[in-house]
Every structure is written in structure tokens, then in C-alpha cells.
Image 1 (cartoon, rainbow, N blue to C red):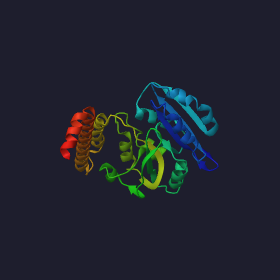
Image 2 (cartoon, one colour; image 1 turned 135 degrees about the vertical axis):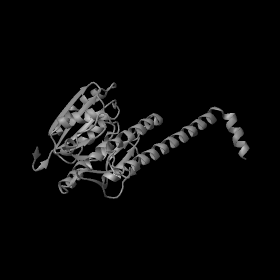
Image 3 (cartoon, one colour; image 1 turned 60 degrees about the vertical axis):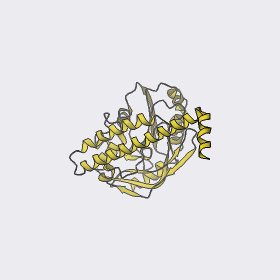
Image 4 (cartoon, rainbow, N blue to C red; image 1 turned 60 degrees about the horizontal axis):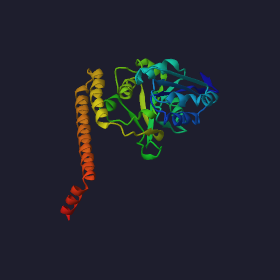
Amino acid sequence: MEKNNQPLVSIVIPCYNHEQFVQDCIQSVIDQTYENIELIIIDDGSKDNSVLKIQEMVEKCQNRFKRFEFRYRPNKGLSATLNEAIDWCCGKYFSAIASDDMLLEEKTKTQLDYMENNSNSVAVFGGVHIIDNENKVIRTIIDEQKKYTFNEILMHQHNLPAPTAFIKKESLIKVGKYDPKIRIEDWYMWLKISKIGEIVYLPKAFSYYRDHQDNTTKKNNIMNVERFKVISNFSNDKNYSLARQQVGWINCLEKNYTRRCEKFVSKCFYLISNPVFFLYKLIGKL
């Protein structure tokens, strides 16, 4: 579906319990400089007021977008929600943004221009601004322009931030869409589509990625298991053994880092809670 020779871009917001952030996310899509966009929002069974926050912006979205769709239903998980959106959308290109993240205004136009002029590419990514819960930029990560191979992605020698992804929809369908059994759905998808075309990183920030202070230990434990689950799908690859070793090292480093951080926080809390002991230790250093 084209308008004035502009390909239709499908932007998808899968939402889950982000009442505090979802309106900022939607507004960032509204503010895109590229015109021919359809916006698909699927609330994946939020237990907070996310649905109400989205409904407050329905009229604004209907006035802005070529096509706007919103549905909410019981929780199915992120991969199932993304697959539902792929089946529902009509665009040539697919861009998903988490409901607590935001897009920079030029993201869609810049990435579409690149894809339209580089037919061998199946996806394009870029840099991110890391933000806190008050939308304050903590740091910015932008690398040099690069084309990533399957082996580089398999060996974790890549920087492909999910909030910046801009993908040919036909490529997602060709590789069987997202796997609901995989929790690291983005890494697995990048691996699959890298086998059918070029994946490119452009040296420009495209998105704001929100850094939450979640339960790091629990999150890392899940990631450790899921990494092995992903690479098990490529057990016939010549670099499979090396990839398993690499995942093992990454898991080990994360566990050690988390353990050291937890010990440091625990020690600080103890010293603050016991000021007499703290003064005794301080005087002993003098």
C-alpha cells in the first residue's frame, strides 16, 4: 500500500503494564517525519491502566495515521503478540517498539531511505539513547556503520538494539516469524534473517531505550538459559561449539558481575544501618 510512491511502514507497539510510559511511546510515533505509516497497538493483558492511557490517544492516532488499529486481550507473551501484529499489518516494512521506549523523529524516514536504496538488506539498525524513568538521557551508544554476518551475530560480536530494528516484513514471514518458545526473541530473529539478506547498522541514534532497575539476578538467570536455547537451533553450524563456549563465558561473567554488585550493595546497606561500626572502620583507616 503506497501513498505518493511512499511505501507503507507498519509500526507496532506491543504493550504490557506500561501506563507511565505508553503515551510517550505513541507520541513518538505520531511525531515521525515520514508520513505513510500505519500504527498497530496490541495490549497483551496489562493489569494496570495501560489500556485507558492508550484509549485517551485513539482520536489523535486516527487523525495522524494512514491506518490505526488497537486491540487488547488476555496475555499471550511478546513473541505471540509480535506474530499477531505481523499477520495484522499491511506495510512493506515492520518496526516494533516496546511501550516504554520511544522513537526519534527521523527514524522511519532515514531507515526507509536506506532500505529502498539497498535492495540486498533485510534489516537496518542504529544507535540508542539510554534513558531513565524521567526520560533523562543516561548515555548514548552509537557505533560505526557495519554489515553484520550470521557468524558475528551467533558469536555475540554485534550491536543490534531491538528498539532500532527496521525490517522487511516479507523477511519475517519467510523465516517463520517469531518463536513463542524463545524468550530472547530478538537475537533469534536477527540470526534467522541474517541468513537471507544483509543486516546493517547505521551510525545514528534512532531510539530511546529505557533502562529499568529490575531484578537483575532473576533476569540474568533467565537469559543464561535462553541463550543456550537459541543456539541449540543451530547445532549443525560449524561454529556451534565455539558459540556454546562464548555463551558460557557471557553467562559466567554476568553471574560474577551480579554477585559482586549484590555484595557491594549489601555491604553499603550494612554500614549505613550500623553507623557506629562504620565510624569504627573509618577511624581505623586514619
